[in-house]
Length: 131
Image 1 (cartoon, rainbow, N blue to C red):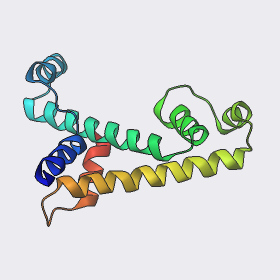
Image 2: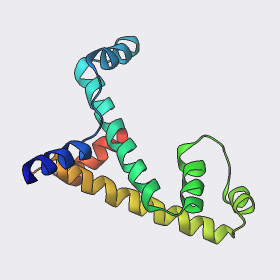
Image 3: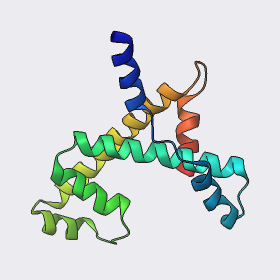
Image 4: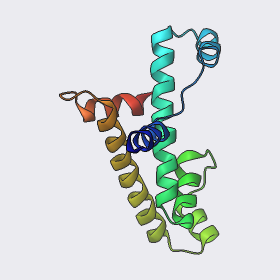
């Protein structure tokens, strides 16, 4: 029984896998090799999972500020976000800093789970963020 529960938990913790057709459809149009396409999709999956965890852990207002400033091309500055969310510009800066630091920690945690002992987390983090 415990084995089944552990197996279910492990399966739930894994990132969403994508089908061969999904993976193939994107890289052919962009001139990428299959390996490059796989790496890009893997990095995207890690970032999506990390962002989802950040959303769960963050206060809704703080995540909204992070989402609008870092994930969308809204072009909103600190002043606009401060007015929109009813906080000071310093609060916007602090919330963004906190969210970015926590996102980095989450990414490092996820990468440690995926890496073989001896592989560099920092190297893999740079790889994920450049994709």
